[in-house]
Length: 335
Image (tube, rainbow, N blue to C red; front, top):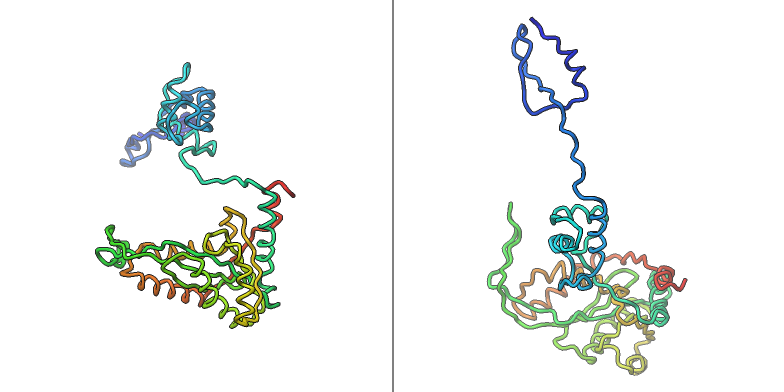
């Protein structure tokens, strides 16, 4: 005898599939099919909306304003703070962890932020630098070479107890955590904004005379090789190259040494390393060569950095700088 399953299935349409199985169709043999059972009613939310709103408000405040001695909130501390408030129920950390990302709030993260103290002075120095960046390729055709010059200080040469082991299948590159210091170097470098090529020189100390040597021995010969008649130096306010007599010294040397070059110095605003294109190259150097660190001596470190510099110049391209004067003016509210 066959069991009419069509009518049964139609009567169970609002129901959902269960996790059990049954057999039916005796005459046709056993055939397994899902047993349909009614769904459980949907569980309503446990917490009223006001609890989540209160947790969000606390997450948008600093912990010390809530008399909690922490630098920033974590999920567990937020849950304890909500539970300590009168009239609010106990909330788990995982529940708080679901509420806040839904509001795009992550108080356990942070970033560095710095306020511009003098917007007018900042814009006065930054505007000509940004204009140089925008016109660098056209200027070099006219004989004006735009160069960002800076130094990366105190680069440590650390010799690991064991040499790094190369990566293998299912195994990353292995670096020994213990090392011995073998000294430190300072890298003075100049980035050509027009083409992205870098020139550099290492020094054992950080002094103005070392900066002078870099200009005389590296930068000026490169400018002569390029056939330019003016160097536009973009500098920050570092102690090695910010003495008051720098520009006068440059003009005197150009006349005494018969460089047939003129210099124009453009000073970046204070605390504005993010406007220095050379800092981007320093970041690449740090990530691609200096980490992990394994150099047996400062000579080894010097040779490695010069080899990295020459290797990068073979495929160098100008940095795609997109930040403009107009964007800075809008940032400072001066548009």
